[in-house]
Every structure is written in C-alpha cells, then in structure tokens.
Image (cartoon, rainbow, N blue to C red; front, side, top):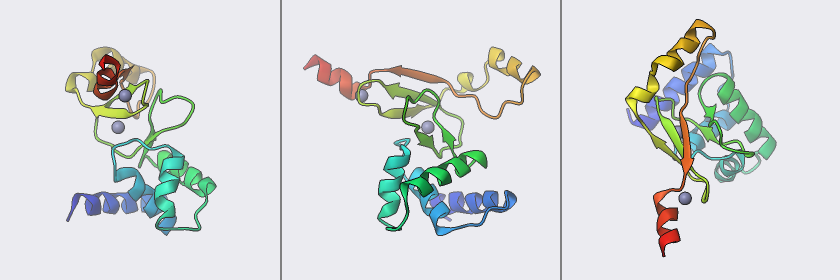
Length: 147
Ligand SMILES: [Zn+2]
Ligand SMILES: [Zn+2]
C-alpha cells in the first residue's frame, strides 16, 4: 500500500466513524490537501479539485474543508492570517510562515511537542492539538533581499 492509499483508507474510516458519506467531493478535496505540503487556502484547493471535478463550487470546497477540520482529518494552520490555510498533515509538527512570500513550512522539534507549560493546559482543557508557530523570512526571501 502506498502512503497515499494508506492515508485515503484512514480518511474513509474517519468519515465512516463520523457517519459521513464518502463522496467524490470529499475524497478529491482531501487528496488535493495532502498531495502537497504547501498548506493551501480554500481557493488553491478549489483550483486543484476543479481539474478533476469541473462542476464543484468554491462554496462546496469551503464547506468540505470545514467538515474535514471538524472530523479531525485536517486543520486550519494557526496564525495564518486573514485567508485560512489548511493542513492535512496530522503528524506532530510546527510551522514557520514567511511574512513576505507567505509560504508555510513544516518543521519538527520533539521538545516543542511536549513542553511542560503546554502540558499544564491539560489540567484545565481537553487539548486536541498544540501547534507552535514561528514567522519571519524564508531562505529564498532572505537571498532576494541580499541581491
Ligand atoms: Zn519567503
Ligand atoms: Zn503543516
């Protein structure tokens, strides 16, 4: 089984657990989301899915992304600004956003997954996800600045 097939199978199970029909729309939106690590906006997902399902509307894509968020198959990247950016990568990771080109990069630091302070939250809340978010300039933009 390929990585994509495995993810799709888990996704379908998740839909079933949440009593959601596995529609072509949901599958294609999910596929578009996990096929790159660009953390796409709803518009970017729409552009991709339209290639496969020409009749889909931006509204449907938006609603589908929100549904994926609700069932935990995807989430909205914290701090990503006025335009929501989505992430289908459920592995523990952190984000770096470039304030210039607006690219969002994944990075992973294990100590950041479980810091003592953040774990204290568990005493008060049911924590579903902790995301650490950093911003600044990416390598490409720094190089452009120096030229
Ligand atoms: Zn940049
Ligand atoms: Zn990510």
